[in-house]
Length: 390
Image (cartoon, rainbow, N blue to C red; front, side, top):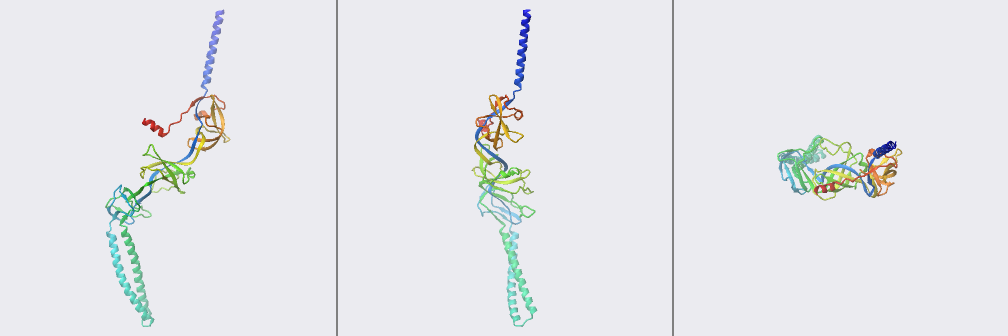
């Protein structure tokens, strides 16, 4: 009997132990895992992103003010030219012929006008003495005034013809480098009209000062102001950022047309001109990504923005991790950047804050036990490149 009783007692103890172990495991399975970070003190900045194209601050498309065939091009791609240097020559034959023809006509009119003036003065003198009829006097006057008008009209036509002849010699409008030559000798060039774009023969740029013609989305354009600092990254430089400043902002949205289209615009955007203040080898046409720093604060308490939650009342909160548990903390939020938020009240530097996962954060209760996994900060792009080189 005693043996049977002992067996029963042992079996009961075993069952109780198994039951307790299973319940502990089951309870342990309900403890959520939470990623956490330590609230830090440092700088935070709000950024507006804008994509654009590198251009020279002084960059001119050289065209022609007249229509004609290119007779000679005096420069090549990459040449440096000074303002006033001869770039190319348009066929002068028809323009010279027009000037000579008008000069001959003007000489003939001058001689006829001088004779008509003398005749008119003589006729006027005779008319005042009553020696000729009024009709003869009026005919003389009309002939003189008509020749005078023809002479003046031909004179101004000659001036215009000489001006057009001078435009057959195309001069450099600025000093700089020839960065493109789009036409060859023998090709026809045309001047611009309302419906037709002018022929661009070549482009000259002064490359010592560069800028970015960028475009800002309508949702963020009100944050951008002249003089704000800009970080400019260019595809050609993987380990360097250029410093820039917002130089000008258009109050009118970008308008695309058949002659001018941009791959940097989608929806409603506003043009912004960013002056690059750094030195470096940059070429017109390079793609640029700009980060405009619209607001910056130093020495503030900051946490990852995903740590924040919002009550129905509109108040912000987060969870502070302490001794394996989370405690709900109402906070006052200041500046919010792309991935960080400034905490004005409720959190101190060094506090451990729950930052994820999002689905877990939204189900946590005040005082709930959790399993903490400290989240490591992702390395910056430059740190990753240095590690890759090593």
